[in-house]
Image (cartoon, rainbow, N blue to C red):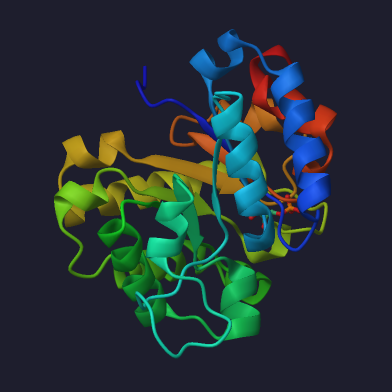
Length: 258
Ligand SMILES: O=C(CO)COP(=O)(O)O
């Protein structure tokens, strides 16, 4: 029986302005009870422009919901127009930061090197990375999903010390399942999540690998979350579309009731 606390994180992507963010987090706060937070860690990843509003709400009302950003600059400060740095995010008391989401890789040409630099920047500033990995459809069709995903993992973790790696969160998000309604089968999710844990054991130790939480992401909904969470190496979900509906997100948090 794993001692890992599941992490249910809503990646809002480029949705919800700061006023909508306040209303949404208030709804979650109203619906979620202490027993939910004891069973599951709950987090939201709003757009940068919402973070101050979310922080004010969470701080002011002592909410147990965690929050974080969807990206981070590898640099601390300077002439990097449009970028947001680790010190800025930690000043806003972010807990998490997503790194290497497939949409960042696709539209912003992020690769293993940039992900590695961003993972290190996150730790430097006290943020916990949610490192996103996962294959596209062509790779899946070729049966190369495990090797491809492990290569992404190796690159992003390069030279990362064990004291840092032990708190990382890995999100396995097969690109073909993101926003498509085509969820991976629980067995598909387990195959790659299990392989990720195996690689962490090789790179570090079994003890470290057993501590790391590995999420599945891609068309997770209240109707499919329980079967995915029943897999031994799946420790949570990174939820896109379904996280924009507060009632649906609460149902996902309560996956054990589904
Ligand atoms: O990309 C995702 C979360 O980061 C998944 O998105 P969907 O849940 O909308 O498929």
